[in-house]
Length: 351
Image (cartoon, rainbow, N blue to C red; front, side, top):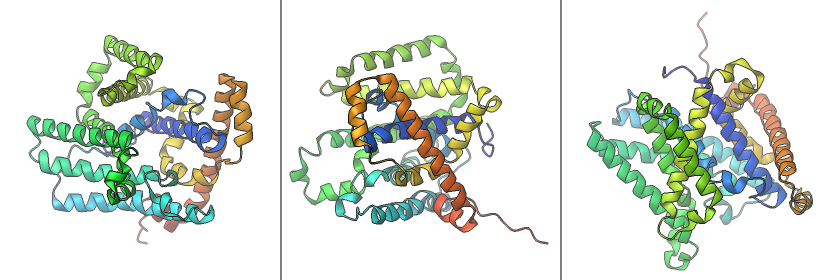
């Protein structure tokens, strides 16, 4: 895979992941119940997949983490992740009258993703530069151990922080500002970089149908018996297993059917959504139909899962379309496109 060429099935996969995000936000913010229509299962798929893709596209085989490269990469990521998030979040908080300290906690009124993704870039660069500077197998193992520890600490902090909030004192506020509970997904970002680094070996493994069947059975077992997620002491293990299994299965499905995404309108639509995930993520909160609580209560009481799925998908695509139109209008200005969506500035040709 050429580093400079867009990979069509990766764009389509990002589009699919973005639809999963809207599929969760519609019932969560608008219908009054976050876990209807299969979202209780998709919870273990959505964010691992999204962060896996982010790690996959971030990895570059020829990067050497020296001071110049680190400064350049972090400056670029700050302009793409933090600056747009700050602008849109501030405007959103003012518009909806959410200007209060609680709005800057772990979830940041939904705007946590780009903030945490920037933290992942920092963590990944730091672990690679400090623990795998010479790019050895032992260095890669050290990085893996560090990633698992960071992710596990965040996972168990997310589970117990309410119980021990008094003991944490001011540290709870600091960790909330840093969205520390979201660092648990870091392991999937790192996994994305590992898959990109060892892509040919990964393809060889996932071309083996016995491995795919084993992964499918594992994930289905965890889906059928959700109590397995809550076995004391093993919650993090089941969390990793379900995330890895679902991510590998979905990624392999898109890779094996990559030709589909360039031959039909559905595939090209997913690609376009995938190329505008940042725009959609930043804009869609302004257009969510927040006042559907009564309709949501009726829908839930009716108990028709296919109907729930159809309603949520229709609303999701409506919000995506409105967000894309808004994005198109904003992008008419090269200045706004650059500073709000991280678009590269076009160099004027000398006449």
